Length: 322
Image (cartoon, rainbow, N blue to C red; front, top):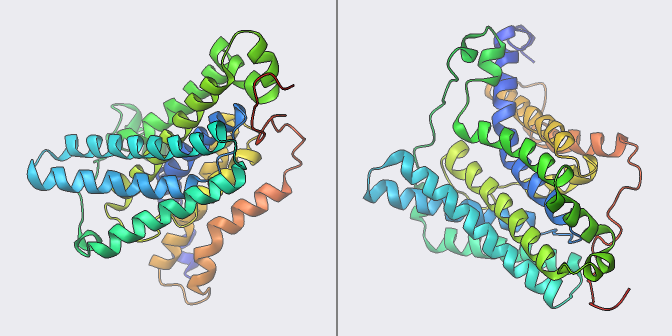
């Protein structure tokens, strides 16, 4: 282990900067799942949704960059395509779990299998897809703040997607816990019959929340392939959808704690990438690959999470039945 290269300020800054960037796809999926679960729907299909969003976003960006040459506009249209693809997958989940009232665990696993099958088919059917590369977003240093020593490099020298994700954390917290709309969502996840008798539609609220949550997960998948990796490969999400689900419970459905959990995962991911790049022979690369997931699980099981699960989570609602 090259400790002389690891125990340096430069290495620490690089780890923290990369950790923030790598946390974004997981964070977006966690925020979306928080919205969905607070309404009473357990969407376990995040892995499949992120895969489909990642493929749609990458394919759209690549096609536009090859035909139009508008690099930055192509990126944002690709991210929009990933968001819409995630929403479409969310519609499938909503129909299965809300309209058809199927078991939400089975519906979620079905979504994962659907996403994996679709992306694997296109990846293998079109070999050029695996060789394609796109140009990602350039960093956008915030004037003045990015010049602050250490802190400026870590926090204020990222792409616009990172800043947008930070704003989404605050926006989700405000909407869920400081607005009437958020109160209606949380009431739907706790006492849907009361929401129904008050004149609101439980079905509509759950549909909207499932679509919004899936859109954020698809957006996260597109950020991973378009902004961060600039490529698409089979199984590119590497379990990030499952990690997002675990972090929802870790965060107790609080966007602020979700940010903390996603940052832990991102920093662990950055550490394993950096140590592999240094060519360490002390630790096998398989251990380094599992480090982010191991750390996430350890943090999850070490938390004494009180039973704050929404009462109606995972339970289909039948109108008129209390």
